Length: 413
Image (cartoon, rainbow, N blue to C red; front, top):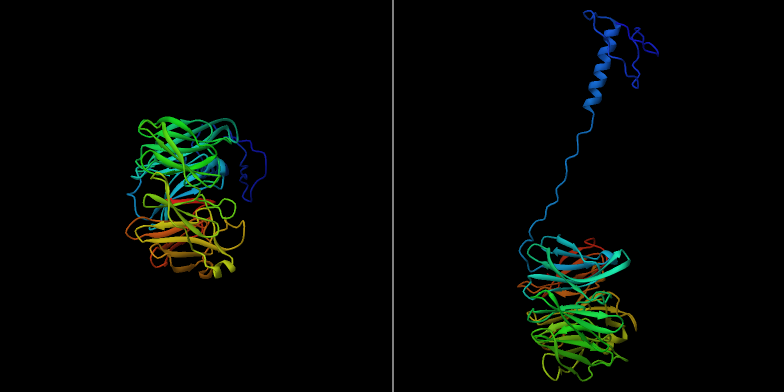
C-alpha cells in the first residue's frame, strides 16, 4: 500500500496530517501490518470521527402559542405605548402579578375604548401601505378580551383624528350599541359604528366641536371652541335625530379645561388648568352644570401648584374621592407630570391627603386612573413605568420603572 503525501514527517517518521488534505482510499491487497502508515490511517479516521462528533445539531423549529387570557382581575390595566407612533402597542399589565399578560399592535395614533361589560376592546387606528406614506386605511379593530384575539374590524372613512391619545377620542355608547370615532380633516365630525352589525352607521358633522362624551343611550356630547357643548342624539340605526348646544361652561380664554374627564353618576367632572372642578351632565336637556369648586387655595396658587399631565385626575364613586396629579409650574405647564397626588373628598370638597411622589423618591406621574374593585388602586404612568397606591391610604403597592416605553394612556382593563 503506497500513499503519496507531500509535507513533513513527525519525530517517529510518521507523516503529519494536513487537515486540508483528502487522501485517496487505499486498495487493500494484504492483511494490514503494524507500520507507520497504519498509524497514520488510524489518525485520519480519528480526526474524521472527531469532526463528525463536533458537527452542530440541527436546530429544532420553534412553535408560537397563544394562551387564553386569565380571568379579569380588579388590578389589570391597559397601557398604550407610543415609543414608535407607527407601531403603537396596547398592553395589559397585571399589577398583582407584576407582569405583562398580553399585548397587540394598534397601528398609528390610535383611539382605544373598552365595552362596558369588559367583553371587547375597540381600537380606531390608521395603517399606511408604505409605512409612513402610501394608501391609508382606517379601521375599527375589535378584540375579544377573553382571548385577546382580533375577532373583527370595520373599515372607516380615512379621517380618524390622529392626535395624542385621549380617552375620549374613541368611545362606546352607554348602552354598548355604538362606537363614536372622532374625525379631523381639519373639519370635525364623528363616525358612528354599529357594533352589533359591525358596520358604519353614519357620520355626524360636529361643527368645529371635538371628541365624544357618551351621555345616555344613543347620545354624546362634544366640546366646542365657544366654551359650549354640542349634544347629539341618535336613533336606533345610528342616524342623528336632534342636536342642541349647551350654555357656556368653559372659560376658553382665561381658564380652559383639560379635555380629559372623569365619569361621575350620569355626568362628568372636568378640571380647568388652574384647578377648578366643573361638573357637567349632558344626559339631560338642557345640559346641567353644578357649581364649580376650586382645589387650589390662594396660598397653593402663590406656590405655583396646578394640575398637569395627559390624564391629570381620576375619580372613584365607590371611595367618594377625587385624585389629582399636581405640580408646581406656571402658564403653559398643564402637560407637566405630577410631583404630588392630591386627594379630595367629593362630599365636602376638602383635601384629605397629599401623596408626595418625588419626596418619597418616586417618579413623577403622567396619568392617573383608579381601579373599580373592592380594593381600589390609584395607578398611572411614569412615562416608562407604572406606580400604584392604595386608594384609601396612599400606601405604595407597586412601582415598576421599566414596564414599557412612552406610556401615554392607562385605564382599568
